[in-house]
Length: 373
Ligand SMILES: [Zn+2]
Image (cartoon, rainbow, N blue to C red; front, top):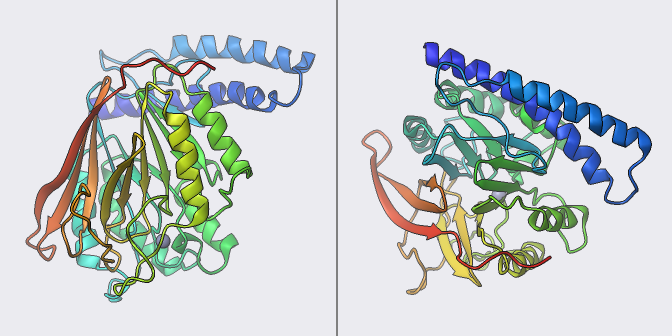
């Protein structure tokens, strides 16, 4: 308990330091289009002074390495440092929390089994690929979310969600209010970046425009171009997949990849070529699991969190070829310069759940240097 309390205090301090550092990155971002004014320079001076004081104050408690922010100048909206390496995080999505008696939209028994299992894994954080609830403006669905995600809250996980189409269903204003109420640390951002040690997460909103030249597209380009040197792994997270074998024309239904995400994927592939860091795109929307590699980029679809299953086509050379539904979560173990990815599949009806790693890979950072800029 003592350690938990110390960790809680350290996190509080860390959040304060994070806010101060964000103040630095905000004027930096806005200065891209304008020359720094005297007032801005003065503000930067005072912020640097405050940051120095805050860093001194943020002393790790009782030998426990406290979480604190990434290196100065990191442009991430949220910056945290892991307690140590290796650490794990989990990604999954398309849960569609709703009335448990609605067995067509989502399987309450299986989604509950998944939540409990994920909490037991004790990851440092959780990435959600969207469609958290069935209908974003429905308070009853969010009540189900609140009830059923208690194990995650008790496990003290950081949660970094991406917006899905169902999260905005109904009145968008009400839906967003419900969403941001659960995730105040996003500070009303529909897309945002997270630095977590040697990992950099770029969480996109595929319900907003991600067309070439759009605000979000340019933001993503700038983030990829300004990655801190120490980053080993970049995760681009969004709901609509840039790459999937699912098709709305298939007999089982499902969704095809849309033009804007396909083009976004190509842009990321182009930028990733010159990076030392490895890039993994993690999407949802397709209620199953898929994994492909193209031009050095890994594309993962993780949408087997409880929603009615889709059955995308499987090709013999794909990394995952199992037919049928795939309720699952993805577990990523991050070490310095290397990661292990595992897809853990839920077998059984939930009450007698069996968990098996059905797909996995390991990646190291690339040897070649970063692209000259
Ligand atoms: Zn969706």
